[in-house]
Amino acid sequence: MPMQAAATARQTTFDELGTPLREVTFVVVDLETTGGSPAGAEITEIGAVKTRGGQVIGQFQTLVNPDTSIPPFITALTGITDALVASAPRLATVLPSFLEFLGDAVVVAHNAPFDVSFLKAACARTGHLWPSNVVVDTARLARQVLTRDEVPNCKLASLAAHFRTEVTPDHRALSDARATVDVLHGLIARLGNHGVESLEELTTFSGKVSPAQRRKRYLAESLPTLPGVYVFEDAEGRALYVGKASNLRARVRNYFTAGELRSRMREMVALATRVRHICCATVLEAEVRELRLIAEHKPRYNRRSRFPERSLWVKLTREPFPRLSMVRAVRDDDADYLGPFASRRAAEAAISALHEAVPLRQCTTRLSPRRPTPACALADMGRCGAPCTGAQTPEEYAETVAAAREAMRGDIRPVLGTLTARLSALVAAERFEDAALVRDRFAALVRACARVQQLVPLAGTAELVAARPDEDGGWEISVVRFGRLAAAGRACRGQDPLAVAGALRATAEIVPAGFGPAPAASVEETECVLRWLSSPGVRLIELDGVWASPAFGAGSAREWLSAGGDGSITRVDTDRSLRTVHQPVAPLVSRIAHT
Image 1 (tube, rainbow, N blue to C red):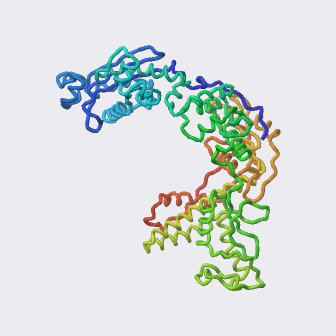
Image 2 (cartoon, one colour):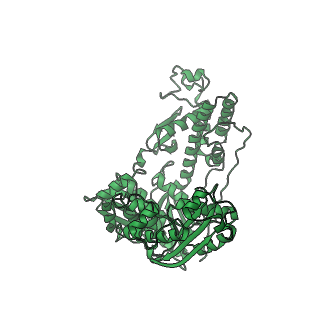
Image 3 (cartoon, rainbow, N blue to C red):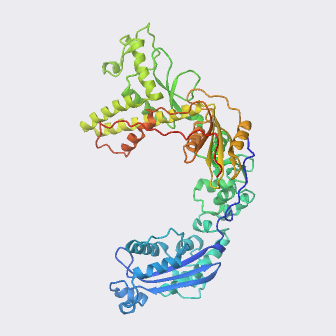
């Protein structure tokens, strides 16, 4: 797919590395309570310090009347007595003022889960909404940064002594919060040596990322902040890993500074000497290019999409007495195909379900109407019409084949009815394990039919041009030919999207038609395009061909499948009718209004 000139750079709203720590407002919070759990304890004191850029800009402190007696050991620890809080405001009065002080700042606490759990419970009891602020736990950060040689443990008192805080923690809320402020600043200074400079890097930091891994962050410095694809390469130029991103520089930097914990990724980064990139006009183009590069280079550290050619298909053969066969590729032989399947087990399950519903022959011998052969056990069981013996004529067997072909192509209802009846009989006989097996086979069949019935219409469409509004008031535009993304571009706000679409069509890749259900691209690419086309706001500009899914196809059985897809078989509703699901395509437009 050729690169399109319609791609334009966009000014991001903040530094590409995230929100710089010097610009972040932190509110360091500490609570004193009557116990260790909000389920049976109350808050007795709230202390908070607001800091930004290393400077304290505000403080909040209040005692809270818990409406319950304070246990003696808590009084001994904190010095807070029943008499001290008797005249203090109650939580319902204090909480609104604290939430106003907090605002949208980052919440910091030592052992944050403890303090945050009490605050959330307090909000729930008083009818307030706990804000979705970012939370930072200084205890967790200390465990990631400091060693046992430096501090014996990560208690607040130990950290305060290590960082020589101005205030000594004494189990009173404001004093402990002020000490935690100094601990936070000390930890941030230490994290700066690891390359942590933004809030996003701070919240995802992990000490398990080696210094050598962090030192390779320079590999991301030359990358732009645009959507695209990145390729990690070794010293010999071999692709190690391929990925996509909406912001190339920010995404690639995560491998060095954001706590990448996957061992194989750490190994990959250790081998990488270069990161090559390809800028893309849209996120869809990035997703497609990623799939193509993975299939082309088969990078050793990518796990998915490396071998699309290994997918399995179920083929309804073209011969006098057709049968189901498992094959590796779709051929131009006018046969019917189902799939693709990710595993042999899934393909076998779908074949078993179709055999359960339609009495196709299961023998592998090539039969001839002129030379009868002995029947197998399936004929005696009534599960095959025995065309091998001549008991079933080619014309009679053709009706059976037509039923299987119709289920594969478009009308799943007869198969659904047969398998539902089978499930009902098994459940009535309390043969739940057998019923679960039939259900799982049917699920594999429905998914495969739905997949191929989605692929076929788009794979047979000569050209489809569509547009989707973007976040900046412009349009993402895609040209799809025979299921393959042939061009992608963007019309900026105020730019005529139809003019951009016309230019993309004129310069788009020339794509020859595929055959059968196999599109001119990989199945994963076409499914990626389908997801984009079904996303909110997509509008069709041009359509050369007919793009429609069967009204009674397997897609309409998804509701039935979801209802029975929880892994349990308790009952089967035999009266459940198959409701037709109609999802109209967005109307064809001759003009897309400017926004």
